[in-house]
Amino acid sequence: MRKKQLDIFLSNLKEMEEPNMFEEQYTTPGDIASEIVLFAYHRGDIEGKTVIDLGSGTGRLGIAALLLGSKKVHFIEKDKRAIEILKDNLKTLTLKSNQILGEYEITEGDALQVLLRGDTIIQNPPFGTKKRNMDTKFLKKAFEIGNVVYSLHKKGNYEFIKNVALENDFELVEIENFNFPIKAMFEIHKKRKVLIEVELYRFTRCYDGSERRD
Image (cartoon, rainbow, N blue to C red):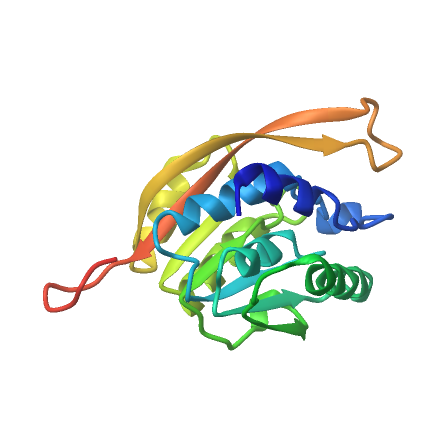
């Protein structure tokens, strides 16, 4: 699937109508979601892999992974409203996709408590502006359950995040920059849209000399 087609498909999926400000429920824009997953795809981390969309929300990242050939995608989400929208989006995927798709499974529950294992973790975690250190907690959980991790974070925390990775036997190997548009969804927002500078990090697990490094 070409990027433009993927952009359009993801952009037409349903979003949260009344997102929770304190959970930082910002929908990943379709074009950014497609770019993130294509970035992972071109590095061999999507096609034929078991992917975990941690804190999946309405599912754009995981759905992109299915469209790009993942063997199985696990959607992990605790918000019941988001899960209902995710289910609708997966129905849309099934009806409108003209390709054979991998399996998927929805797990309702706290992403930080999940016991699954996957090849690749893709996540757009809370930035930690409302609940301190929530981004770090998501990152540590991703390191616990995957071998390759793609995680989106607010710009300016490179050194800290690199050290968190090393402490958990992961290496930060690549960075991509994005301007993440956040719509005015809450009463406290004075502008219709603001652009937040974010960085997508790719991490791989560190192995000793006797094992292959990704």
